[in-house]
Image 1 (cartoon, rainbow, N blue to C red):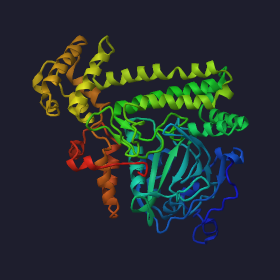
Image 2: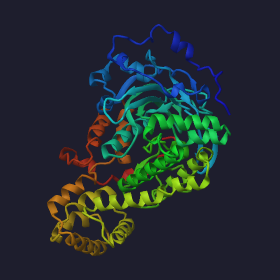
Image 3: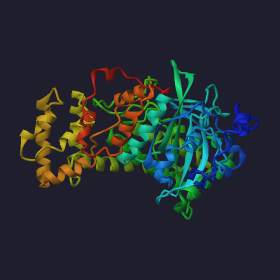
Image 4: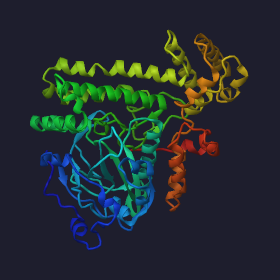
Length: 516
Protein backbone atom coordinates (compact mmCIF):
# COMPACT_ATOMS: atom_id res chain seq x y z
CA UNK A 1 0.00 0.00 0.00
CA UNK A 2 1.40 3.37 -1.02
CA UNK A 3 1.07 6.54 1.07
CA UNK A 4 -1.97 8.62 0.13
CA UNK A 5 -0.46 11.82 -1.20
CA UNK A 6 -3.92 13.18 -1.97
CA UNK A 7 -4.47 13.47 1.80
CA UNK A 8 -5.37 17.03 2.78
CA UNK A 9 -4.60 18.01 6.34
CA UNK A 10 -7.81 19.37 7.92
CA UNK A 11 -6.01 22.50 9.15
CA UNK A 12 -3.59 22.97 6.28
CA UNK A 13 -5.21 26.15 4.96
CA UNK A 14 -5.45 27.62 8.44
CA UNK A 15 -1.85 26.81 9.21
CA UNK A 16 -0.40 28.07 5.98
CA UNK A 17 -2.56 31.14 5.43
CA UNK A 18 -3.08 32.61 8.90
CA UNK A 19 -1.23 35.96 9.15
CA UNK A 20 -0.62 35.16 12.82
CA UNK A 21 1.65 32.21 12.14
CA UNK A 22 4.76 33.10 10.05
CA UNK A 23 7.89 32.40 12.03
CA UNK A 24 9.71 35.41 13.48
CA UNK A 25 13.00 35.58 11.60
CA UNK A 26 14.50 37.75 14.37
CA UNK A 27 14.29 34.88 16.84
CA UNK A 28 17.44 32.91 17.59
CA UNK A 29 15.44 29.82 16.73
CA UNK A 30 15.41 30.94 13.11
CA UNK A 31 19.17 30.32 13.08
CA UNK A 32 18.60 26.59 13.43
CA UNK A 33 19.76 25.10 10.15
CA UNK A 34 17.00 22.56 9.55
CA UNK A 35 17.66 20.07 6.79
CA UNK A 36 16.01 16.77 5.95
CA UNK A 37 17.92 13.94 4.36
CA UNK A 38 14.93 11.69 5.01
CA UNK A 39 12.83 14.15 3.02
CA UNK A 40 15.11 13.55 0.03
CA UNK A 41 14.04 9.92 -0.20
CA UNK A 42 11.47 9.05 -2.90
CA UNK A 43 7.91 10.33 -2.28
CA UNK A 44 6.59 6.86 -1.38
CA UNK A 45 8.49 7.01 1.92
CA UNK A 46 6.42 9.80 3.47
CA UNK A 47 3.65 12.33 3.11
CA UNK A 48 4.55 16.04 3.28
CA UNK A 49 2.20 17.88 5.65
CA UNK A 50 2.25 20.48 8.35
CA UNK A 51 1.25 19.97 11.97
CA UNK A 52 -2.20 20.92 13.21
CA UNK A 53 -2.21 24.12 15.28
CA UNK A 54 -2.69 23.58 19.00
CA UNK A 55 -5.25 25.96 20.51
CA UNK A 56 -3.90 28.34 23.19
CA UNK A 57 -0.63 26.46 23.80
CA UNK A 58 1.40 26.77 26.99
CA UNK A 59 4.80 25.47 28.04
CA UNK A 60 4.63 22.52 30.43
CA UNK A 61 8.34 21.69 30.63
CA UNK A 62 11.56 21.91 28.67
CA UNK A 63 14.97 20.27 28.99
CA UNK A 64 17.82 22.74 28.87
CA UNK A 65 20.28 19.82 28.61
CA UNK A 66 18.55 18.51 25.48
CA UNK A 67 18.35 22.00 23.99
CA UNK A 68 22.10 22.24 24.44
CA UNK A 69 22.60 19.23 22.18
CA UNK A 70 21.49 21.33 19.21
CA UNK A 71 23.07 24.57 20.39
CA UNK A 72 19.87 26.20 21.63
CA UNK A 73 20.36 28.75 24.37
CA UNK A 74 18.25 28.03 27.45
CA UNK A 75 16.63 31.47 27.18
CA UNK A 76 15.11 30.47 23.85
CA UNK A 77 12.97 27.82 25.59
CA UNK A 78 10.78 30.43 27.21
CA UNK A 79 10.03 32.62 24.21
CA UNK A 80 6.81 32.97 22.26
CA UNK A 81 8.59 31.79 19.11
CA UNK A 82 9.68 28.55 20.81
CA UNK A 83 6.13 27.95 22.01
CA UNK A 84 4.67 28.43 18.56
CA UNK A 85 7.29 26.39 16.73
CA UNK A 86 7.09 23.33 18.99
CA UNK A 87 3.33 23.38 19.41
CA UNK A 88 2.95 23.11 15.64
CA UNK A 89 1.47 26.60 15.38
CA UNK A 90 4.31 27.88 13.22
CA UNK A 91 6.60 26.29 10.68
CA UNK A 92 10.32 27.06 10.62
CA UNK A 93 11.30 28.60 7.26
CA UNK A 94 13.78 25.75 6.58
CA UNK A 95 11.40 22.98 7.65
CA UNK A 96 9.69 20.63 5.21
CA UNK A 97 7.55 18.68 7.67
CA UNK A 98 6.48 15.15 6.85
CA UNK A 99 4.99 11.95 8.25
CA UNK A 100 6.81 8.68 7.49
CA UNK A 101 5.30 5.36 6.48
CA UNK A 102 6.30 2.05 8.03
CA UNK A 103 4.72 -1.27 9.01
CA UNK A 104 5.31 -3.81 11.74
CA UNK A 105 4.49 -6.77 13.92
CA UNK A 106 2.37 -5.85 16.94
CA UNK A 107 2.26 -8.37 19.80
CA UNK A 108 3.77 -10.89 17.39
CA UNK A 109 1.09 -10.45 14.70
CA UNK A 110 1.70 -8.78 11.34
CA UNK A 111 -0.24 -5.51 11.47
CA UNK A 112 0.42 -4.23 7.95
CA UNK A 113 0.90 -0.56 7.19
CA UNK A 114 1.30 1.74 10.17
CA UNK A 115 3.33 4.94 10.03
CA UNK A 116 3.54 8.25 11.87
CA UNK A 117 -0.07 8.42 12.97
CA UNK A 118 0.46 11.36 15.30
CA UNK A 119 4.08 12.37 14.68
CA UNK A 120 5.53 14.85 12.21
CA UNK A 121 9.23 15.15 11.40
CA UNK A 122 10.33 18.78 11.24
CA UNK A 123 13.83 18.06 9.95
CA UNK A 124 17.33 17.52 11.28
CA UNK A 125 19.73 19.88 13.02
CA UNK A 126 23.48 19.72 13.30
CA UNK A 127 24.24 18.48 16.81
CA UNK A 128 26.38 20.68 19.01
CA UNK A 129 28.35 17.72 20.32
CA UNK A 130 30.22 14.94 18.60
CA UNK A 131 29.71 12.11 17.84
CA UNK A 132 26.00 12.83 17.51
CA UNK A 133 26.31 14.35 14.03
CA UNK A 134 22.74 15.45 13.37
CA UNK A 135 19.54 15.10 15.37
CA UNK A 136 16.06 14.89 13.91
CA UNK A 137 13.27 16.93 15.52
CA UNK A 138 9.86 15.30 15.67
CA UNK A 139 6.56 16.56 17.07
CA UNK A 140 4.43 13.83 18.69
CA UNK A 141 0.74 14.59 19.11
CA UNK A 142 0.66 17.17 16.33
CA UNK A 143 -2.52 16.03 14.57
CA UNK A 144 -3.85 13.61 12.00
CA UNK A 145 -1.76 12.16 9.21
CA UNK A 146 -2.58 9.64 6.46
CA UNK A 147 -1.34 6.95 8.87
CA UNK A 148 -3.59 7.83 11.82
CA UNK A 149 -6.08 5.09 10.94
CA UNK A 150 -8.95 5.57 13.42
CA UNK A 151 -6.93 7.86 15.71
CA UNK A 152 -7.21 11.61 16.20
CA UNK A 153 -3.47 12.24 15.85
CA UNK A 154 -3.21 13.81 19.28
CA UNK A 155 -1.26 12.88 22.41
CA UNK A 156 -2.60 13.57 25.88
CA UNK A 157 -0.80 15.54 28.57
CA UNK A 158 -0.44 12.42 30.73
CA UNK A 159 1.46 10.36 28.16
CA UNK A 160 3.50 13.34 26.97
CA UNK A 161 4.81 14.05 30.46
CA UNK A 162 5.64 10.37 30.93
CA UNK A 163 7.61 10.27 27.67
CA UNK A 164 9.39 13.53 28.43
CA UNK A 165 10.47 12.45 31.91
CA UNK A 166 11.46 8.91 30.95
CA UNK A 167 13.47 9.98 27.91
CA UNK A 168 15.53 12.31 30.08
CA UNK A 169 15.69 9.80 32.95
CA UNK A 170 17.10 7.14 30.63
CA UNK A 171 19.70 9.60 29.37
CA UNK A 172 20.62 10.28 32.99
CA UNK A 173 21.06 6.54 33.54
CA UNK A 174 23.37 6.37 30.51
CA UNK A 175 21.02 4.12 28.51
CA UNK A 176 20.77 4.92 24.76
CA UNK A 177 17.52 6.75 24.09
CA UNK A 178 15.70 9.34 22.08
CA UNK A 179 15.65 12.66 23.91
CA UNK A 180 12.78 14.98 24.80
CA UNK A 181 13.08 18.72 24.24
CA UNK A 182 9.79 19.97 25.62
CA UNK A 183 6.09 19.40 26.24
CA UNK A 184 3.60 22.00 25.04
CA UNK A 185 0.11 21.67 26.53
CA UNK A 186 -3.35 22.87 25.57
CA UNK A 187 -6.86 22.81 27.02
CA UNK A 188 -8.04 21.05 23.85
CA UNK A 189 -9.66 17.77 24.95
CA UNK A 190 -9.76 14.38 23.29
CA UNK A 191 -11.41 11.15 24.35
CA UNK A 192 -9.38 8.28 25.72
CA UNK A 193 -10.86 6.19 28.56
CA UNK A 194 -12.07 9.61 29.77
CA UNK A 195 -11.76 13.10 28.25
CA UNK A 196 -8.18 14.36 28.60
CA UNK A 197 -6.30 17.50 27.69
CA UNK A 198 -3.78 17.31 24.86
CA UNK A 199 -0.10 18.09 24.44
CA UNK A 200 2.74 17.91 21.94
CA UNK A 201 6.09 16.46 22.97
CA UNK A 202 9.14 17.28 20.86
CA UNK A 203 11.58 14.42 20.71
CA UNK A 204 15.01 14.12 19.14
CA UNK A 205 17.06 11.24 17.78
CA UNK A 206 19.68 10.73 15.13
CA UNK A 207 17.06 8.77 13.22
CA UNK A 208 13.48 7.59 13.70
CA UNK A 209 13.82 4.71 11.23
CA UNK A 210 12.49 1.48 12.75
CA UNK A 211 12.67 -2.25 12.13
CA UNK A 212 9.16 -1.83 10.75
CA UNK A 213 10.45 0.64 8.15
CA UNK A 214 12.35 -2.26 6.55
CA UNK A 215 9.47 -4.67 7.00
CA UNK A 216 7.17 -2.28 5.15
CA UNK A 217 9.01 -2.58 1.86
CA UNK A 218 9.74 -6.29 2.26
CA UNK A 219 6.13 -7.28 2.83
CA UNK A 220 4.94 -4.99 0.07
CA UNK A 221 7.44 -6.67 -2.26
CA UNK A 222 9.31 -3.53 -3.26
CA UNK A 223 13.00 -4.53 -3.22
CA UNK A 224 14.18 -1.28 -4.82
CA UNK A 225 12.62 0.78 -2.06
CA UNK A 226 14.07 -1.61 0.52
CA UNK A 227 17.55 -1.11 -0.93
CA UNK A 228 17.04 2.66 -1.01
CA UNK A 229 16.17 2.61 2.69
CA UNK A 230 19.13 0.39 3.59
CA UNK A 231 21.53 2.64 1.65
CA UNK A 232 20.07 5.70 3.39
CA UNK A 233 20.54 4.15 6.85
CA UNK A 234 24.10 3.11 6.02
CA UNK A 235 25.02 6.56 4.74
CA UNK A 236 23.31 8.49 7.52
CA UNK A 237 23.86 6.32 10.58
CA UNK A 238 26.50 3.68 9.81
CA UNK A 239 28.98 5.21 7.33
CA UNK A 240 31.77 3.09 8.82
CA UNK A 241 30.03 0.01 7.35
CA UNK A 242 29.93 1.28 3.77
CA UNK A 243 33.35 -0.22 3.04
CA UNK A 244 32.51 -3.58 4.59
CA UNK A 245 32.74 -6.60 2.30
CA UNK A 246 28.99 -7.17 2.72
CA UNK A 247 27.53 -3.87 3.94
CA UNK A 248 23.94 -5.08 4.37
CA UNK A 249 25.01 -8.10 6.39
CA UNK A 250 27.26 -5.83 8.46
CA UNK A 251 24.31 -3.48 9.02
CA UNK A 252 22.09 -6.29 10.30
CA UNK A 253 24.87 -7.56 12.54
CA UNK A 254 25.54 -4.15 14.04
CA UNK A 255 21.85 -3.39 14.66
CA UNK A 256 21.50 -6.82 16.29
CA UNK A 257 24.54 -6.22 18.48
CA UNK A 258 23.30 -2.80 19.59
CA UNK A 259 19.84 -4.18 20.33
CA UNK A 260 21.28 -6.92 22.53
CA UNK A 261 23.43 -4.37 24.37
CA UNK A 262 20.44 -2.09 24.88
CA UNK A 263 18.16 -4.75 26.31
CA UNK A 264 20.88 -5.92 28.68
CA UNK A 265 21.06 -2.36 29.99
CA UNK A 266 17.27 -2.33 30.39
CA UNK A 267 17.39 -5.54 32.42
CA UNK A 268 20.13 -4.24 34.69
CA UNK A 269 18.18 -1.04 35.34
CA UNK A 270 14.91 -2.91 35.82
CA UNK A 271 13.36 -1.00 32.92
CA UNK A 272 10.42 -2.49 31.03
CA UNK A 273 9.43 -0.99 27.69
CA UNK A 274 5.93 -2.44 27.58
CA UNK A 275 5.33 -2.50 23.81
CA UNK A 276 8.26 -4.11 21.99
CA UNK A 277 6.55 -4.24 18.61
CA UNK A 278 8.87 -4.13 15.61
CA UNK A 279 7.57 -0.66 14.71
CA UNK A 280 8.86 0.53 18.12
CA UNK A 281 12.37 -0.86 17.61
CA UNK A 282 15.01 1.66 16.56
CA UNK A 283 17.44 0.85 13.77
CA UNK A 284 20.01 2.66 15.95
CA UNK A 285 19.57 0.38 18.96
CA UNK A 286 18.19 3.16 21.17
CA UNK A 287 15.11 3.23 23.40
CA UNK A 288 12.24 4.59 21.34
CA UNK A 289 8.50 5.25 21.78
CA UNK A 290 7.74 5.49 25.49
CA UNK A 291 4.23 4.24 26.17
CA UNK A 292 3.30 1.94 29.07
CA UNK A 293 6.84 1.64 30.41
CA UNK A 294 7.77 0.87 34.00
CA UNK A 295 10.77 0.50 36.30
CA UNK A 296 10.92 -2.63 38.44
CA UNK A 297 10.02 -2.04 42.06
CA UNK A 298 9.05 -5.23 43.97
CA UNK A 299 11.19 -7.67 41.99
CA UNK A 300 9.18 -10.11 39.90
CA UNK A 301 10.69 -11.47 36.67
CA UNK A 302 7.17 -12.11 35.34
CA UNK A 303 6.09 -8.52 35.93
CA UNK A 304 4.01 -6.98 33.12
CA UNK A 305 4.08 -3.19 33.08
CA UNK A 306 1.51 -2.85 30.27
CA UNK A 307 -2.06 -3.54 31.40
CA UNK A 308 -2.99 -4.16 27.73
CA UNK A 309 -0.50 -7.05 27.48
CA UNK A 310 -2.75 -9.76 28.88
CA UNK A 311 -0.50 -12.62 27.71
CA UNK A 312 2.72 -11.20 29.15
CA UNK A 313 4.55 -11.15 25.84
CA UNK A 314 6.47 -8.06 26.93
CA UNK A 315 7.09 -8.93 30.57
CA UNK A 316 10.46 -8.17 32.15
CA UNK A 317 11.84 -11.69 31.71
CA UNK A 318 10.61 -11.89 28.10
CA UNK A 319 12.34 -8.72 26.90
CA UNK A 320 15.64 -10.40 25.95
CA UNK A 321 13.86 -13.07 23.89
CA UNK A 322 11.55 -10.56 22.24
CA UNK A 323 14.54 -8.39 21.35
CA UNK A 324 16.04 -11.35 19.51
CA UNK A 325 12.68 -12.19 17.89
CA UNK A 326 12.48 -8.65 16.57
CA UNK A 327 16.00 -8.87 15.17
CA UNK A 328 14.96 -12.02 13.31
CA UNK A 329 11.98 -10.11 11.91
CA UNK A 330 14.41 -7.47 10.66
CA UNK A 331 16.65 -10.20 9.26
CA UNK A 332 13.70 -11.67 7.37
CA UNK A 333 13.05 -8.26 5.82
CA UNK A 334 16.70 -7.98 4.75
CA UNK A 335 17.15 -11.44 3.21
CA UNK A 336 16.86 -10.13 -0.35
CA UNK A 337 19.52 -7.49 0.35
CA UNK A 338 21.96 -9.86 2.02
CA UNK A 339 21.30 -12.61 -0.50
CA UNK A 340 22.01 -15.72 1.53
CA UNK A 341 20.01 -17.04 4.47
CA UNK A 342 23.16 -18.39 6.10
CA UNK A 343 24.67 -14.89 6.03
CA UNK A 344 21.52 -13.54 7.68
CA UNK A 345 21.81 -16.13 10.45
CA UNK A 346 25.49 -15.30 10.86
CA UNK A 347 24.62 -11.65 11.43
CA UNK A 348 21.84 -12.54 13.88
CA UNK A 349 24.04 -14.99 15.77
CA UNK A 350 25.76 -12.11 17.58
CA UNK A 351 22.65 -11.45 19.68
CA UNK A 352 22.93 -14.15 22.34
CA UNK A 353 26.68 -13.91 23.08
CA UNK A 354 26.48 -10.10 23.09
CA UNK A 355 23.54 -10.09 25.48
CA UNK A 356 25.05 -12.69 27.81
CA UNK A 357 28.46 -11.01 27.92
CA UNK A 358 26.99 -7.57 28.53
CA UNK A 359 24.55 -8.88 31.12
CA UNK A 360 27.34 -10.64 33.04
CA UNK A 361 29.40 -7.45 32.96
CA UNK A 362 26.47 -5.38 34.26
CA UNK A 363 25.70 -7.79 37.13
CA UNK A 364 29.38 -7.76 38.01
CA UNK A 365 29.35 -3.97 38.21
CA UNK A 366 26.09 -3.88 40.16
CA UNK A 367 27.58 -6.26 42.74
CA UNK A 368 30.81 -4.28 42.94
CA UNK A 369 32.99 -7.15 41.74
CA UNK A 370 36.28 -6.38 40.05
CA UNK A 371 36.36 -9.43 37.78
CA UNK A 372 34.28 -12.37 36.64
CA UNK A 373 34.88 -15.63 38.46
CA UNK A 374 33.55 -19.16 38.20
CA UNK A 375 30.39 -19.30 40.27
CA UNK A 376 29.36 -15.66 39.79
CA UNK A 377 26.45 -16.64 37.55
CA UNK A 378 25.10 -18.88 40.33
CA UNK A 379 25.63 -16.09 42.87
CA UNK A 380 23.49 -13.76 40.75
CA UNK A 381 20.87 -16.45 40.11
CA UNK A 382 20.49 -17.18 43.83
CA UNK A 383 20.21 -13.47 44.56
CA UNK A 384 17.46 -12.93 41.99
CA UNK A 385 15.58 -15.94 43.33
CA UNK A 386 15.44 -14.56 46.88
CA UNK A 387 14.64 -11.06 45.61
CA UNK A 388 11.64 -12.50 43.75
CA UNK A 389 10.52 -14.68 46.64
CA UNK A 390 10.61 -11.71 49.02
CA UNK A 391 9.29 -9.11 46.53
CA UNK A 392 12.26 -6.89 47.34
CA UNK A 393 12.41 -3.40 45.89
CA UNK A 394 14.90 -3.67 43.01
CA UNK A 395 16.55 -0.22 43.02
CA UNK A 396 16.59 0.05 46.81
CA UNK A 397 18.29 -3.34 47.24
CA UNK A 398 21.20 -2.60 44.94
CA UNK A 399 21.67 0.92 46.27
CA UNK A 400 21.78 -0.35 49.87
CA UNK A 401 24.02 -3.27 48.95
CA UNK A 402 26.89 -0.83 48.44
CA UNK A 403 26.82 -0.06 52.19
CA UNK A 404 27.54 -3.68 53.14
CA UNK A 405 30.98 -4.03 54.72
CA UNK A 406 33.17 -6.98 53.79
CA UNK A 407 33.88 -7.96 57.41
CA UNK A 408 31.05 -6.33 59.36
CA UNK A 409 27.60 -7.92 59.32
CA UNK A 410 26.37 -5.05 61.49
CA UNK A 411 26.14 -3.01 58.29
CA UNK A 412 23.39 -5.30 56.96
CA UNK A 413 20.42 -3.87 58.89
CA UNK A 414 19.07 -1.49 56.18
CA UNK A 415 19.27 -4.33 53.64
CA UNK A 416 17.64 -6.86 55.95
CA UNK A 417 14.71 -4.46 56.46
CA UNK A 418 13.69 -5.17 52.85
CA UNK A 419 13.27 -8.92 53.44
CA UNK A 420 10.75 -11.19 55.10
CA UNK A 421 13.06 -14.22 54.83
CA UNK A 422 16.11 -12.68 56.46
CA UNK A 423 17.98 -15.95 56.99
CA UNK A 424 17.95 -16.44 53.20
CA UNK A 425 19.50 -13.02 52.75
CA UNK A 426 22.07 -13.73 55.47
CA UNK A 427 23.09 -16.94 53.73
CA UNK A 428 23.50 -15.12 50.42
CA UNK A 429 25.46 -12.30 52.06
CA UNK A 430 27.84 -14.87 53.51
CA UNK A 431 28.55 -16.12 49.97
CA UNK A 432 28.85 -12.54 48.74
CA UNK A 433 31.36 -11.63 51.44
CA UNK A 434 33.40 -14.71 50.63
CA UNK A 435 33.48 -13.59 47.00
CA UNK A 436 34.52 -10.07 48.00
CA UNK A 437 37.29 -11.57 50.12
CA UNK A 438 38.67 -13.48 47.14
CA UNK A 439 39.53 -10.19 45.45
CA UNK A 440 40.41 -8.28 48.66
CA UNK A 441 37.66 -5.80 47.96
CA UNK A 442 38.04 -2.36 49.53
CA UNK A 443 34.74 -1.18 51.08
CA UNK A 444 35.18 2.51 50.23
CA UNK A 445 36.23 2.00 46.62
CA UNK A 446 33.55 -0.63 46.08
CA UNK A 447 30.80 1.66 47.38
CA UNK A 448 31.94 4.45 45.07
CA UNK A 449 31.93 2.11 42.08
CA UNK A 450 28.56 0.56 42.92
CA UNK A 451 26.88 3.92 43.44
CA UNK A 452 27.95 4.90 39.93
CA UNK A 453 25.93 2.06 38.40
CA UNK A 454 23.07 1.52 40.87
CA UNK A 455 20.78 4.55 40.71
CA UNK A 456 19.31 6.01 43.87
CA UNK A 457 16.47 7.53 41.87
CA UNK A 458 14.35 6.02 39.07
CA UNK A 459 11.10 7.21 37.52
CA UNK A 460 8.67 5.18 39.60
CA UNK A 461 5.14 5.20 38.27
CA UNK A 462 3.74 6.91 41.33
CA UNK A 463 6.26 9.76 41.05
CA UNK A 464 5.20 10.33 37.45
CA UNK A 465 1.55 10.16 38.47
CA UNK A 466 1.97 12.80 41.19
CA UNK A 467 3.64 15.09 38.66
CA UNK A 468 0.86 14.45 36.12
CA UNK A 469 -1.90 15.14 38.66
CA UNK A 470 -0.33 18.49 39.50
CA UNK A 471 0.30 19.34 35.86
CA UNK A 472 -3.36 18.75 35.05
CA UNK A 473 -4.04 21.58 37.51
CA UNK A 474 -1.45 23.77 35.69
CA UNK A 475 1.15 23.23 38.41
CA UNK A 476 4.31 22.07 36.62
CA UNK A 477 6.66 22.32 39.57
CA UNK A 478 6.79 18.57 40.18
CA UNK A 479 7.63 17.87 36.54
CA UNK A 480 10.54 20.29 36.82
CA UNK A 481 11.64 18.79 40.12
CA UNK A 482 11.64 15.26 38.72
CA UNK A 483 13.52 16.38 35.61
CA UNK A 484 16.28 17.90 37.75
CA UNK A 485 16.38 14.88 40.05
CA UNK A 486 16.45 12.23 37.30
CA UNK A 487 19.18 13.91 35.31
CA UNK A 488 21.57 12.90 38.16
CA UNK A 489 20.12 9.58 39.33
CA UNK A 490 23.37 8.25 40.81
CA UNK A 491 24.06 11.28 43.02
CA UNK A 492 22.94 11.22 46.65
CA UNK A 493 20.95 14.49 46.50
CA UNK A 494 19.98 14.15 50.20
CA UNK A 495 17.43 16.96 49.88
CA UNK A 496 15.38 14.54 47.74
CA UNK A 497 15.68 11.40 49.89
CA UNK A 498 11.90 10.94 49.96
CA UNK A 499 11.97 10.20 46.21
CA UNK A 500 14.14 7.14 46.84
CA UNK A 501 11.87 5.42 49.35
CA UNK A 502 9.46 2.51 48.96
CA UNK A 503 6.33 3.50 47.01
CA UNK A 504 3.15 4.27 48.99
CA UNK A 505 0.41 1.66 49.19
CA UNK A 506 -1.85 3.54 46.77
CA UNK A 507 0.80 3.19 44.05
CA UNK A 508 -0.09 -0.50 43.68
CA UNK A 509 -3.33 0.54 41.98
CA UNK A 510 -1.64 2.45 39.14
CA UNK A 511 -2.14 0.84 35.73
CA UNK A 512 -0.60 1.92 32.45
CA UNK A 513 -1.75 0.69 29.08
CA UNK A 514 -1.17 1.35 25.41
CA UNK A 515 -3.21 4.55 25.77
CA UNK A 516 -0.56 5.77 28.19
